[in-house]
Amino acid sequence: MAFGYYSPISINAAQVPSTQTDFPVLVSITDARFKTVANSGHVQNASGFDIRPYSDSGLSTAITGYELERYNATTGEVVMWVKVGSLSSSTTPIYLAYGDSGISTDGSSTTTWSNGFLGVYHLKDGTTLSVADSTGSNNGTNHSATATAGKIDGGASFASASSQFIDLGTAIHPVAITISAWVNGTTFPAAYNAVVARVPSGNDFWGLWVKSTGKLACIAQRSPTFTVSYDGTGSHTLSTGTTYYLTMVFNNALTTAALVGYVNAASDGSVNVGTQFDLQNIAATVDIASDPLTSPRFWNGMLDEVRIASSARSANWITTEYNNQSAPGTFETLGSEVAVTISATGNFFTLFP
Image 1 (tube, rainbow, N blue to C red):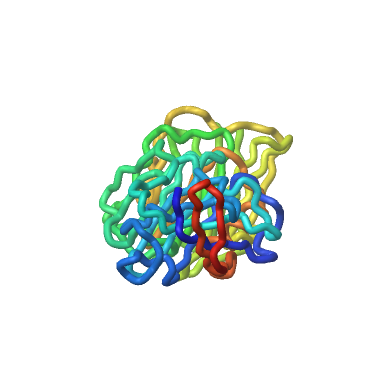
Image 2: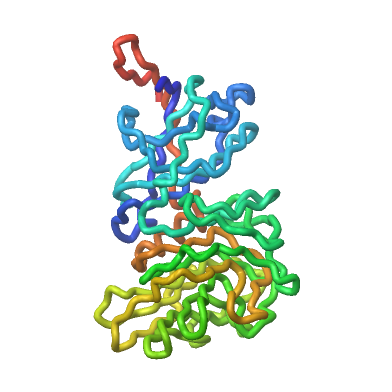
């Protein structure tokens, strides 16, 4: 690689409550240096493909687990997810290198989402809705949802009266689970308004709903014998027209199985049961914005960054996600640009900070 420049990205203190492993960091920045050369910046490729993350200032160790979600050559906007092996508030884990005219292909990789993710739906880009899964495994099928402004690079708009939803197929069936999404309800018209739900048949299901009262309903059930849930008894009441980050975690690894719901990374409610159990590991339909079994339970409003993982994320992981996605400008700091060159012998030189 023959990059002309790099810029460090540091993580600000107090944004990461504990060290997180293989954490996909949202890098969301707009700066003139990231404009293309034709727009008086330093990026060579019109699609931003020569913007590449490294873990060291010598640009010797590339971070191959990254996804370039959005790039604007005119404004210098970069929206990129970078998997950091060990993320803490005391490190500077990311160096963005750019300015290599020899790079013309996208180096984004599905390995960005290798840490237990079963489905990652950015629902980009605000103009033309994408229901692709960034893990590359479970692309959605759109049933009339439309593009809208979201929390990060666009979102999906759903009209419950028109039965709009996204079908994720039948391949997502974990035995423990974390569901997360940014939500903004125009109204809560049904008794239960689905964010993400999986209902194969009868008594085996899991999902996250917002009730007509604005309360969360979080349920994980494997037959009537094994159930863990709380239904409208949490500490938060959601308002319409307001954006929230919702998370539901079911932890099957505990001696006493536990389910916890979160609103903006704050615990909403939790419940334990006396018998450990796994979710039913069989093929079944999973939907965004719909309850596949019970109608009408469609979402009415915006959803963004919907994720499903096969592990129970910790409270500190969820807090780090919320801090990063809710305010990336507070979470991270863009450092001074450094111009570099490579000599004929392959030695790396810093020209100026």
